[in-house]
Amino acid sequence: MNTRSFKRPNKVIVIGASAGGVHALKTLVSQLSPDFPHAVIVVLHRLKNVTSRLDVLLQSFTRIPVSEVEDKEDVLAGRLYLCPANYHLLLEPDYTFSLSVSEKVNFSRPSIDVSFVSLAEAFGKKGIGVLLTGANQDGAEGLLALYEKGGRVVIQNPETAQVAVMPKAGVARVPKATVLHLEEIPDFISNL
Amino acid sequence: MSELINNNKEQKYISPEQRDLLIEFLKKRLDLDISNYSLASVSRRFTKMFNDFESDSAQEFISKIEEEGSPRDFFLKHFTVNVTEMFRDPGFYANLVNLVFPVLAQKEQITIWSAACSSGEEVVSLAILLHEAGLLDKSRILGTDISQAMINYAMHAKYKVRGMSGYDKSYKLSGGQYALEEYLEKKGDYAIVKPFLLKHIEYAQHNLMHEPPAEGFDLIVCRNVLIYFDKDLQNQVLSKLANALLPGKSFLALGSKESIIFYNGRERFKEIDREYKIFQKTQ
Image 1: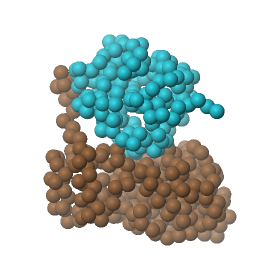
Image 2: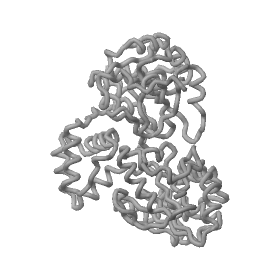
Image 3: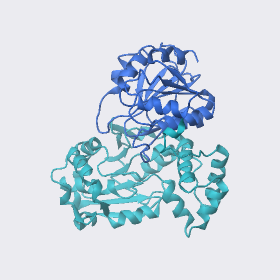
Image 4: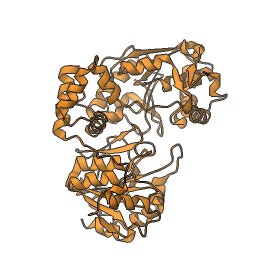
């Protein structure tokens, strides 16, 4: 028997990252405890037609079960979900995922903005958006939508991010965001 | 501070109330029932349309649609996702050729349905690979889409040359043996599908919620469409697709992140490709 939980998460956390993201994610996920009460969803800009096993890689750094999202899968507590390459990831109010292959947004599919906006609409105050390192401005607009719906907005400190463009754009769009060093983020989101 | 990001137009997001008003309008006035579509996707499409048409309310948006000569076609053209490409997911096509074509090769005739084919790129890709496998002469491919505008586009069989170099790469990764130029004739900015492929292709308008356009298919390809439906509607559509397949030795191909788990009759199928979601109908 496995001991995985099938509970609804307290909060739904979407983490967006681009250039430098894999390295940052390693640090972040390795500090999450197995009884983590929230769901973590990672939306990372990736190359299409490259079958890199990012799920396997991230799993090697964390005790939380990691998997790539399938359409209409449940959003459960204590899990780490990875957005598949070449799909936008959306959240449904009934705690399931929907995928979409619609137009690129900010030249990206997945687009972090798309997932943050969907998080805001589906979960509002129960939503947490985390924006990490990256070389473009995807995510900033979605963070604002989340903030306006009462969700928490956390941004990696641009000064210590590998690439500052994305977190900088986030802070510019949501000046009241909580800005943290990468190492501080796991503790902060665990205790929300 | 926010002036730093100059390309960010103020986005308007549609409220759940406005969304529901629109859903009701579509059902009552345009005979389009999208109440079992994925809510998150519907919100996103509506939001995009609101912003594109600069509408501030559902009422304003509805008035705009109603001004059009054919409101239903106009709405569908903008609402449905028409992002498609030739040989999308080359690994899928390669596996289709390796796992499914050998079984199809044993048949006297092959009928294939590309469901929700948009502007036809998938249909053309299938025809090319069937040709290279020596199967095209006994094949017929039917492409259908809910949008008549997309079907018209597909029937023109003209594709922008701009996308072709990417397609050529995907074609080769799919196991393509020659070059796409063998199949598409360049004329100015367009590449036109050659007649020897087109004579095996038909297009028709069709809504997946209605009864299938024909039955007895050997292969149905319906990729990245179910993702826009909720579990209930996935079950309904999968049941119709299953019934349209020949009993035994017929196949269903879905998108790589889709599944048959929400289909009540899923035991009728055997999964033959886990990664690319190819199923064989066994009962």
